[in-house]
Amino acid sequence: MNLTRRGHEPGWQAEQQQYLLFYSRATCVVTIVLMLGGIGLDLAFYPDRLAEFALVRLLASCIIGAVLLSYAFEWGRRHLQWLTYFWLCVPQLAICWMIGRTEGEQSIYFVGLTFALSGIGFFLPLTLLEAIAFGLGTVMAYVAACLLSPYGVERPSTLAGNMLFLLFYAVVCAVIAVYSGRWRRQSWQLKQAVERANDDLRQTNAALAEVKGHMIQQEKMAALGTLSAGLLHEVNNPVNYSMMALNMALADPAAKASADLNESLVDAREGMQRVQNIVSDLKTFAYQKPGENPARVFVLEKAVDSARRLAGHELKGVRFEVELPMDTHVVGDEPGLIGVLINLFSNAALALQKSGRAEPRITVRGRAQDGRLHLAVRDNGTGIAPEHMTRVFDPFFTTRDVGQGLGLGLSVSYAIVQRHGGELRVASEPGAWTEFELDLAQANAGGATTDRGDAE
Image 1: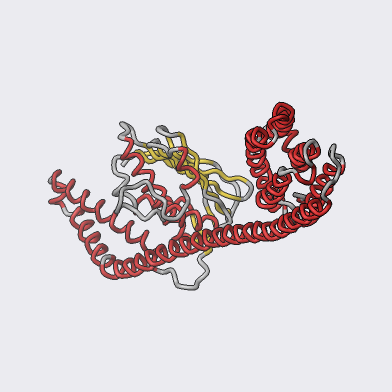
Image 2 (image 1 turned 45 degrees about the horizontal axis):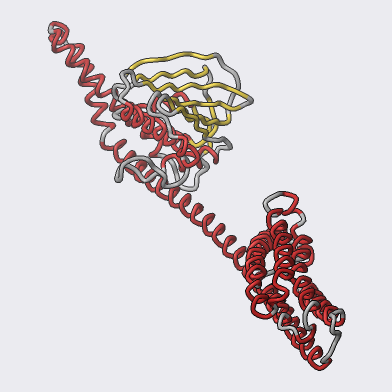
């Protein structure tokens, strides 16, 4: 029970303290039951002393019960070790007193001392020295009771035999204490090893999930780059020819003479211009070489516009407001950050779709602070439930329906922003709004703010 001699680790000491508290309580209850139940033995063996022995048993039970009650309070738990030492002596002394009041070495009650020795050795975390001291103390108390009995020691051989019997039990108690202590120690070490292995496994799983997310993202980017390169070759030239033809047609007198024809040609030219813008946005992904340092200066405002156009299908009917400083030159991986913005815009659009707002709105605001440009994307959608806030950036966590997403978008986005020396943060009010904010290193500091707002 001496925790300082059982190990120096705080975890082990706390484990021992909890073990001692639990079994000290349990053995208190068992001891009280046995002490009171012993009244039946008194009736059978010493009916003439029934009232006297019952009173002693009741007094011992009350003392042990008071110790048990003290464990419910801080004082009792703080002095747990010494209180346990104390109450363990109470039943032994009570039994020895009853032995002294009867036939001494010939009293059957010495068997109760052996029960106490074996039970305590089994249940309480004694050290070897504590077990030896308790066993020898029991033997000495028994000898004193026999010597002080009214009849003295009438049969020394019986006393010697009983003493030897008690010593055998004391040895058993000591052996049990040693091996149970080792078993508890090994069990605790095994538990710690399992917990460490579980922690390592969780970290490994998280790392594998992050790597898998990055690999999926890289594969998507590589596929997008391949597609973009093909589009640049296959689409750009026909688009340019079509633009030239549309401009020539608009200059024709016949087109100017017909309002319907002129309007149709203007609409066609605007459509081709949108195709040109999308192809231009995809150039960003087409010329990213593997192994090349992606960090370069680019204009974040253009990245926002590119992401907005590439997510344009999902943003239909959403009011899209942008408030950025005049100077939005930042340093970073432009394709990766465009991917982050596309993901944020798409998630915002999905939240707006679920909310059914009459006036769905996404607001993009930027501010310069301490050499970094902070960009916030806020929507007035469904918001995020409080129980999901701590899991938003976990890999494979998603609230979407099955088949609508792997739950990797935000975790990959978080890693991309973190790679830029920034942090992707989230704030939300359920049922009202959600805001994601990231920060990037500025290429140049300063700049006034311009406001742009329109609807698609």
